[in-house]
Length: 369
Ligand SMILES: *Cc1c(COP(=O)(O)O)cnc(C)c1O
Image 1: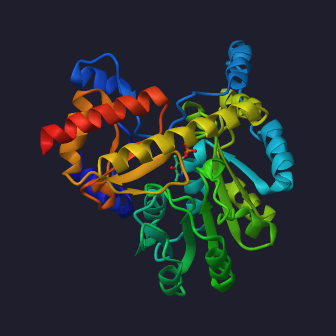
Image 2: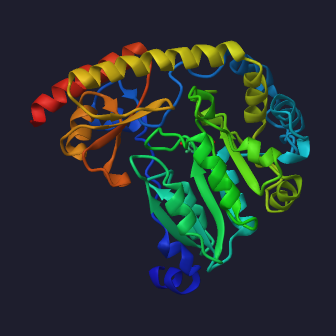
């Protein structure tokens, strides 16, 4: 079998690194033997989905034998309306992860180059490598995108530049004026890929969405998702906003029923729940201030965040700390996979979860030091 794979599989698949997901709650229950686990590892909304989304999904459960709408008609129209763009500019995907892959399949050939920051979301590397494209990584500067260095990395082979804004795992945004001048300088034949998975959490006046560049007619795409503030990660719905001709090209490689029926229904209902959005944002802000205060009291450096997660320096081996926290039923993310072996990334949870996390962190640090 091994020899068969070696000889017959596309060589690109041997360049792929496995995705490291947040450890699932049930897995930790089995491993640690605890029943009460909190997961602060995947930036999920501690309030859960919008009650309107739950209600809409329940109503549709007896229709599961029917294929979903291949065109996502209602959801596309709702989003076009809310974002003030044409419906032809919207693509819906099985999570924004799928959309990233569809863009790679539409545009990338072996030998093409893509540029992204290090560390950033791992999907850009993954989807590019699947297609045999070359990955050019540009280190962050002070935990932020180094746009000058990214511009310097452009070559005639560059097809896409990814800007994760705000960036995962650091939670930082790109300054609006810096982004403006960067976008003006990027050659017109390069696709600008703005990943805005945490867009709804940003309350920073220095932020500008990539949507303004799409609207200005740049070759740009904005990726957003229902997985984070909308609390629908389990149903897998993301969307992209771009030029209609780009959207039409990507549609060509899209599977007919890529977005499941319950996902479409839940996302549509969630769009109308501004109250849930505001409650989620308020809870996140309060949790952020609480965690900042506690980190400061512990003398731990953190990166100020514009998202629902915080990247912070524990001062100790993060893998060891992760294991200690796991034993106490708290799941977080380690920084080693991002090149920061003493850092953790923690999702801002409910107040109760945040307090339990801080208590466990204090205990774990005492055990290790
Ligand atoms: C969570 C996340 C996504 C993935 O979202 P899905 O819509 O669930 O696929 C995309 N980009 C970033 C930066 C994320 O953190």
